[in-house]
Image 1: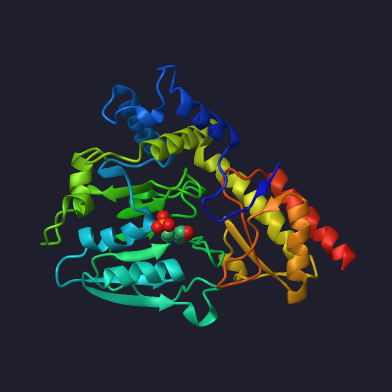
Image 2: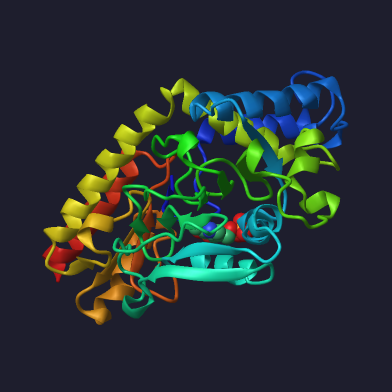
Length: 354
Ligand SMILES: Cc1ncc(COP(=O)(O)O)c(C=O)c1O
């Protein structure tokens, strides 16, 4: 058995993978593969409806918000957020907490003025800036809730005089959030929600239709809402596997229950890093991510032999992103605490030998 610490596409629950594999051959006893049925069939419509209901239930989505399953990844949402929410001639505010936040704000510059309210670029994004003011004349304030590459996370969401737009790609459904505090939430599915190929969008309806610009259909949230995420052929399989993953999460007790598990996994792992003389965590302690635990070897020469030991123990996906180096243990919802314990044992064993 492998212990999958990969940052994304990330680990999915084994039982979800088994069900998905069965559906590829024979979907719910229909004698047809899920891959060869119409997206307009009652069978697939039931899948999509259930996926939407599960999102609403697991995240307690209030009235006045729409849930969409779109294509193009979170990177497409970097552009669609300003396309749909930033009025002609207006401005938006961004918190720059990493490469993804930077890519998001670059896309917004195609549509209007962008004010970067704060950045932690000077420290290679090892912390979340906290001292800043969000301009009241911005159309929205964009944040990235979890910075996958640097292992930092916003543990408190900022108070903002304008609607908050949040990229939750790498911590969606890992902790409770109050959806009413956001104007728009988006997330590529491939870390905590399902496979690559589908992107979740939760948007507050009354923010739409105010830009004064024409928006092509596929990029227009309103059109996608009216089409029930089926303006064109949706990513049926990715939606199905996401639905199974959300069902798995619900059976585990939902978001509050997984949050307790995630906090426990993060705590034992950070404690093990802090108490091991050979390793050092990268992020500022108060901003440490509960999803991506980034750490380095105090002696860079230990990096390769430690990865080799991990490989022998079936630990995969631990190499850090090239812009940070070292190691990154992604401990998403589906990763069992037993895998975290195997990593901790490997670290202890390595420290004893070195
Ligand atoms: C926080 C964050 N935002 C955006 C992205 C980009 O997502 P996608 O590949 O779905 O465009 C990633 C990918 O890792 C991410 O971690």
